[in-house]
Every structure is written in C-alpha cells, then in structure tokens.
Image (cartoon, rainbow, N blue to C red; front, side, top):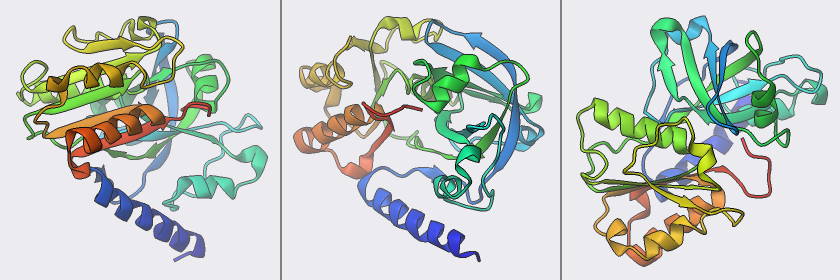
Length: 288
C-alpha cells in the first residue's frame, strides 16, 4: 500500500469514527469510482438553478445507495484541461492538493437528482452564484459536449422506518429533500402530513421556481439575513414540529445545520445519533 493511501485511510478512519458517534448512520461505498462524464443537456430551472445532465458508460451499472446520494464533480483546472487525481486515493482532496497547481481540478459535491442507469445518465441541480466558486462558475457556462468527471460519494438518509421525521433544507439541499420525499412515495411509506414534516429556507422563493416543491413543504424566506435565521425561530415557535421526533435530517449551509442540531439536542432532547446534519456550504466561503 502506498504511503499516501495509508495516510488517507488513517485520516478518513478517524473522521468516520467520530461521525458514527455524533450523528445518525449513513451509507458509504466499499470502493471508490471515478470516471469522465459528458454534458448532454443544460436546463435553466430558474434564474439561479441549472439542471445539468451528465452521461457516461459507467453509469449503466451504477445504483444509488440512498435517495440523497452525493457525488464529487471534478471540473477542469486553471489550465482549462481536465486532469484527474489518482483514482485509488480515498482522500480525494489530499490527492488533488498534491497535483501541480495549474492542473488541480475543481471539486464540489452535489446530490444526484435523478439517475437513469438505462440511459447511462444522471441529472444534477446546481445553484449558481456567478463565478465565486468552481462549481458555480462551471455550471454557469456549461454547454453540451463539455467534459467533467464523476467521483463516487455516499448517502446520508437511510431511516425509512422511523415514523416521526423532520426534514430541513436550504436552497442547496432542496434537490436532496425532494429525492427523499420521492423515494418514500415510491416505497409506499408515509409522507408529508403523515408523520413527515419538511421545511425549506431560501433567500427568496425565486430559487424554487421549476422545482415542483410540494405545497405541504413549509417555506421560510430569510432575505439577506444569515442562513438559519428564518427557519430556526419558526421551529422554536412551533414546538409541535419537533415533538416526539424519531429522526431529523438537517442539511444546507453549515450554520443553519448546526444551529438546528444544537436546538434539537439541547432544547428538544433528541439523541445526536438520531440526527443527520451536513454543511453543504459555509457562509463567507465559496460554496459548492
């Protein structure tokens, strides 16, 4: 085993052990997958959200671990070419950092909005915000025929059997929220209004255009305020929303996710291992 790979396993092993103690179980792939993909379709869902369809022969045999499965999108680096990290490395960020600077690909993690294995393609919905980050910059200018790469990830949602659930997302996590609700419906499980309560916090309702968000999902508009400042007070003011919860899924901006988790643990009394939370991006940093 390479020294670099051994270091990867030590670092990621420690992170995984910590996560297992502090949040709900999640699903990981036993082996990494990495392959090139080609853009075959680009659709503007609204003024800030683009749905990009990617295709590759490797997707024909791909199956999702869960409805909110995420993957790494590797994009051309500073030299305009797509150079990929060692596919054997488990710590992809460390592998990229060791590449020549002008060859380092951009890397951002996104939810697989829909996988159509029979057609060898998948959809990804990306919130754009100009060129302040590699993901947004790439998505804003992506055209049919562009080449990127897919790096396998995992899935966070796996608690289909729990009756009372709270699902909270910001604009970047709406694709995952929708995928969870759709998978529950496919399985014939109780949905919104039948034990499942969902909330979405957004800077404006503009970002929800074209997403077909169910009417039962509560929408909270924060405007120019910090993430979490709209949805958290709403949940605090409605104790019934967090009473007798079996499970909570909280994803989006880091501060939003952590503040909601803190409230559920410290004020509601939930066990940390019954809560999934993930910071998809962090206020003040380039988001994915």
